Amino acid sequence: MKLNSDKFGTFSFPAAYDVVRTTTLNKTDLTGGNNKFYVCEAHVSKDGSKFRLYSRYGRVGHYGTEEERIPEQNRAALDAAFDSLVKEKTSKRKGYVEVQLAQSKMGSAVAQTMVLSDDVKKDKVITSSVDTATTALALHPTVSKLVERLYAEAGQAVRNQLSGTLQTTTENPLGTLTLTQINEGRRILQETQSLLTKKPDLKDSIDKTLLDLSNQFYSAIPQTMELRPRPSEGKTRQDAWLRKMCLNNAEILDSKEDLLQLLSDVQGTVGGFAATNVSMKYLEIGCTYDYLEPKDDTRQRIESYVQESRSKHHDWKCTVLSVWRCEVKGQKAKHVPVMKDVGNIKPLFHGSGPQNILGICKHGLLLRPPGVYVTASMFGNGVYFADQSSKSEQYAFGRYGGGRGHGDSFFMFVADVALGKIKKYQAAQTHLTEPPTGYDSVQGEKGHSLAHNEFIIYNLKQHVLQYLIEFTTRH
Image (cartoon, rainbow, N blue to C red; front, side, top):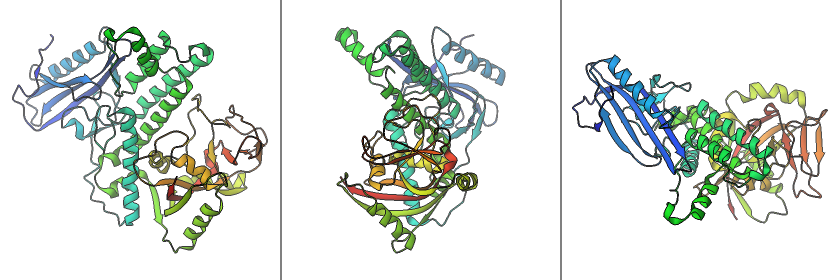
């Protein structure tokens, strides 16, 4: 029997309760202008005597409306009511799909304190203990400041791209998606890319198949979007809005893959985002940082390398603010043996936007997933390095995509890179996913079409991050 809903708080219910089941649903229909979420939770009082069905729904990016339903007061009736409501919302008529979250911020007050397992099911919930630890590390002040900055940058970038999807706090960007959910988004992007490759004339169109794939993507990866123009504003404006929102060209697909990588970074550090203790945030990253004082010989060598390797084509000044010796957890043990075998190890620069540094420190540098198109990658799907600091600085402050961040400084790494036998090219080779046979790496050689050298590896075990540099420029 369908239960009647009432405004949340209508019935008397204990303030202390457990959330025993939860699910978050989403529905995007670009043609219909719909972009809605629906949260459903099953509540049981701490003493096990009271049962309540909680729901919250509305347009993505808005607080929404909270309701409650009171079933017969036993667990079987609560479960039946939960299942019935979810079944109704995910029916073909309603069209909602489940979004798997590692942490939600659009549920009840109790649900917002919970961390769900990565292989989360609607009834598999784990209470977070991330802030119950009493660990207090003796971190150097620059390290504490760095850690806070890295979380803030990643969080800000996600919120900017999603406009507060499912929640808006600094500590937990969005209701954190599980890796399974993020990979579902990647699957849809790859299917869309395949369609555009087979039918290039669909580029920038509002073809029905592209719109269907776009609806699937936005339903899987919820995000706030501007309202669709009203019918009274004319079909021309409505079509222009659809064309803007549709996943219909390589640049949009590339930007969405950037978003998914950011979401992966956030998911990997969900405990750190939930924590207010900087020591816990530090431990969640799993990267060690050893601050090098200005008079330290190693730091002075790095500063000299930064200044002496600058390109004559770049006229801005760079000031090194801080240098940390860094070690990504487990990277040296896995990578150094391979690097010794490959040989020809050189210290090279790698710059990336401030929003990406948290994920790089967590996982090391990563390759894009197979099948994901990347614009402006002249030598295919590899990891790119430079022997001139100012070349990497361009990537650090967002010239080639991504945001500048909300700080006044930027970051780049010095990495040891095993280049082995290098295949040199002076023209783009965008198809590459590995070095040509008999070679270990690729070099885009400055000369006819390139102003600077670029060095590309396709095996992640050919690099180890050694130093993180914070710098500022007058650009």
